Length: 48
Length: 250
Picture 1 (cartoon, one colour):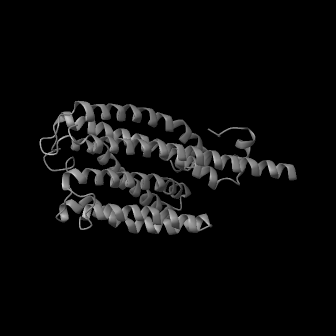
Picture 2: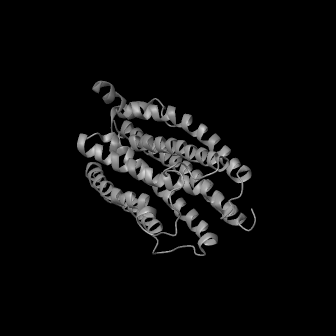
Picture 3: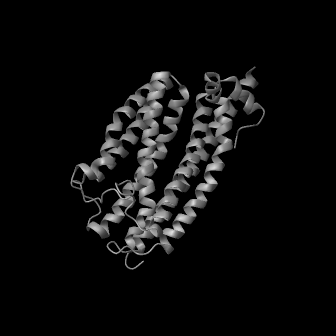
């Protein structure tokens, strides 16, 4: 890599971080939305 | 045929289809990115002008391309949603925005890191490609802020669709900036007259990275579309029945 190793590997690390974060955040948001709806439905059923 | 399209675009159908197709895009995408990384970092010869710093293109180019593609998905989704009143189109636009912002940020950061050894500076305000790409990032932030600021989903969809459509002008400027104005950024490498200006040993890993990133983007978009559908349909009977049956959580 000559003198450019730090630049190149930083870019690849950033790309990996963006991909991992995008996947993780999508999973977390889906779980949270699903759980919120689940809690609301259960609360409605208990009231009924 | 219209019945087929209506059924295809129905929220329960999209919710299930997205769960099925996301892994089929993700895994080939990961394989292509692994091949592209190996080919780009270890196999491709060193560039005679830029040395090994040129290897940054293997993440910079796919990120920059996706930053524009995600915006076009938002704009086309907004346009379809406004004209034909198809809710799914707005849903796709809303799901594409955070991904587009992430890839735009990646393109800016990797471009800046490339600029330091090649141009001698991290950033140049006078450069049209850099500045228009930064404006693209602000457009994504504006789109997401606007959506978050309006409680009524229908009103938010309309306002965001208009913003996305207006912002297309900037995407055109990002793409053609290196041709229209004098720029530090190099000109078109792949989409130029006479074919790509790259050795095949450099080109094939780059194409693999572009395709791999696109497939991963598709998988992430489907995941987000699924969540957006679930949120928008949270008061409907099919969501209630699905959740009571303990399905659709993954």
